[in-house]
Length: 81
Image 1 (cartoon, helix red, strand yellow):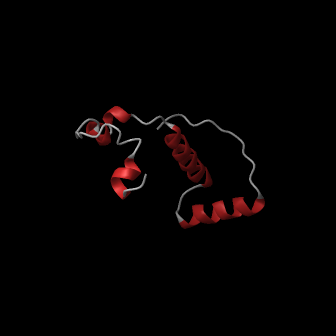
Image 2: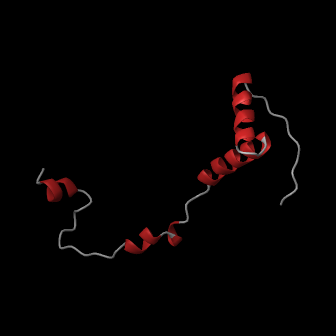
Image 3: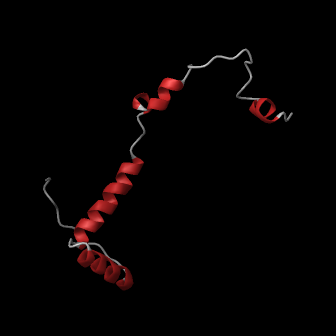
């Protein structure tokens, strides 16, 4: 486990009360709940590695005689102009 550094945070009373209740219910600490929440936010912000995404392999996997599919997809799918 990495070295933890002490910090100070301010919460509204009702939020802190809910955090403490949640910590008691889950047999953990408020600090652990906050660390997990912050970790989740930071993970969301990491840039997606598209090269490792299986969808990346779909690029160029199909062919069509129609070269304007991205522009006229409604026309081909729904018959709309």
